[in-house]
Length: 133
Image (tube, rainbow, N blue to C red):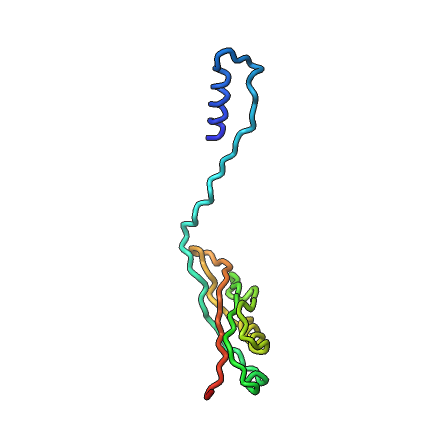
């Protein structure tokens, strides 16, 4: 379509009354790119599969520390954590570290686009709470 537009413009310029062959200025074609089409494949998010709970750190238990850690986890095509980041800290480094260590051992079902497994980010909240408190 772009070539058609350029030829049309050149043809109009060449047909203009009194136009000489040297009067026509050759312009580079204008490239018009269409946005990428949305994928027609259905997206299925990653899901938990094997999620062994973290151990409650002894020091945190003795100090009465509790809290919720929210981790950002990049789940790879094999269902394992590729990258883990603490998005929201529990306020206690020992609890945050225990959460990260546990999630490195987790297995998930990877996200899928159609039948193809794809990497995806998920948020994983882990709550550390002492009983009887």
